[in-house]
View 1: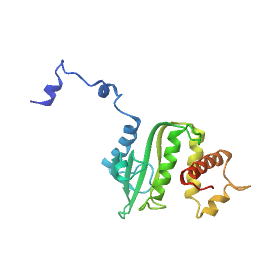
View 2 (view 1 turned 45 degrees about the vertical axis):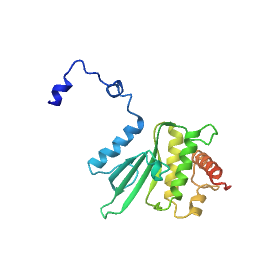
View 3 (view 1 turned 90 degrees about the vertical axis):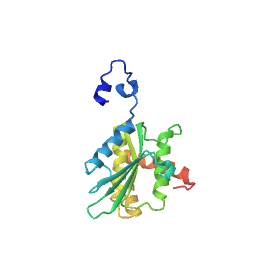
Amino acid sequence: MDISEDLKGEDRARSAELSGGSGFTFEDSAAAYYLSALLGEGYAPGIENHVVSRVAFQQYSFQEPLDDIIVDFSNLAGEPARLRLQAKRSLRISAAKRNADFREIIQNCWLTYQQEGFRHNIDRFGAVVQNVAQGRARALSSLCEMARGSFAAAHFSERFTQGGNASAEVRAVRDDISLLLSQFDGRVR
């Protein structure tokens, strides 16, 4: 039977989830972006100068703490890089005790960073979020750029001293993350 003939049947029930879109989540939308880059052998956000070479989902059982979307990249020389993402429809960037989502993301970022095989200065990790307060998101992004742009921990720390270039909002985000990390690994910073 021709599939087009089968689809024409008036008495065929259609899934409300699929036809109405309620079966698709924000995670699916984010994943589709990386899958499109994979199919087009193109670039995607997260790792510069590398093309997407593999996309995987829900990888917790394979020792990926940030398990929602795992994207492997490679550059022209074939050198690999990996992006690990947690997907959230909305996120509040704060260390509030009731903010389980942000706490979980920071903890899983820390666990990812400590993994054997994590390539420092190559691999990346984080969250892909649909709704987030723009000021805090900008501050978090700036904090990450400051960390990547610092050649040593002491250089990064200088940004937060008197006269350093970190804004008050960037300092607040750094303090929230520092507090959460000290709670996860038992160290006081």
